[in-house]
Image (cartoon, rainbow, N blue to C red):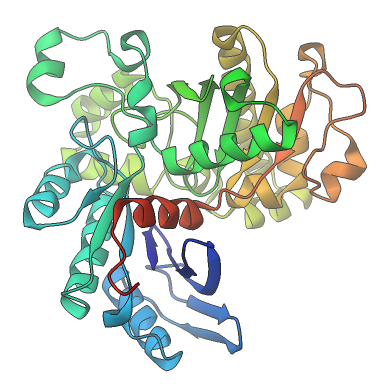
Amino acid sequence: MVLNSGSSSIKYQLFHMPAQQPLLWGVVERIGEAEGTLTQQGEGRAPLRRVAPLADHAQALAWMVVALEEAGVALSRLEGIGHRVVHGGERFCTPVRIDPEVVAAIRAMVPLAPLHNPANILGIEVMTELAPTTPQVAVFDTAFHQTLPAVAFRYALPAHYWREQGVRRYGFHGISHQSVCQQAAQVLARPLQECRLISLHLGNGASVAAVCEGRSIDTSMGMTPLEGLVMGSRCGDLDPGVVLFLQRERGLEASHLERLLNRESGLLGLCGSGDMREVLARAEQGEAAAQLAVELFCYRIRKYIGAYLAILGGLDGLIFTGGIGEQSAAIRARCCSGLEHLNIRLDPSRNEAAATQIQREGAGVAVLVLAAAEERAIAEQVANHLEPRHG
């Protein structure tokens, strides 16, 4: 079983391994909102949907456990449980069997990922309590980016801040970026080691990765998931002087600033909604604030595409993934608009159909729409990490 606790949702999926056959899957969404939802389906089971106020991740996990029990899933019979953990720092570069020391290390990194690591820890603790004899494995979102060169991961700060406190760029969404780059190589019928790729993971959290020869060489998120693109409620790139100004002129304390930058900014701060579906609908109705939010979101993405094409020295494939990247033809079109001189040209009909390849015939760069399949990728890593218990 794979548990993927995000900042506003919990995805879970049950696989038969090593065939990677999904048996049951579900998602709890809109955590912390007035109307949360749980949907679950699986082979030979009637679909399940629940709607009710959803206060926090603890309640969301309780919903999930009840839904699994009603589907006849005995947690104690699982071969293993894999947990997506957002921040592994410099310590965790590969999947690791979870024990109290690992949990303590993940907890120590909460200041670096305050929206995510607490939810990850809660999922680990709940599943450990319910299935104490089942092996639990942490798979880290930062691990894929451990190949960043120093020129990409260092900040221009005194070196002792990096050496003593780990102040550096780590990058996130690594499980997703690694998975779709592997898929892209298969679609292009080329070895991954021969591909130059830019991966756009666009969702409530959003990031870009430059991948050369299968290795991440740069990515938009930094020491925390705040850096980079405009996101649902996160500001993305920001002049650090803005924070100093707000501290000095408005008297904002660290806790207020953290809430502002993580939970009150991004699309939400620009137009009052962090849900791109709603923002697009309002933009189409002519609302100026929503139109600006959409344009700013896509403008920032185009800037990163240009920057990463420069450091890659060329591009074989541009990948869209994540909830927005996979589902919004309008956002894909806006992100690629004006990039024709870089050989990035969309076919409108293919884009509307969300085909796997949406570039025009003869375009020099393949533009791909690929499912992140993070849960499947985690399940594969967990299965490879554990010895089977039941034959």
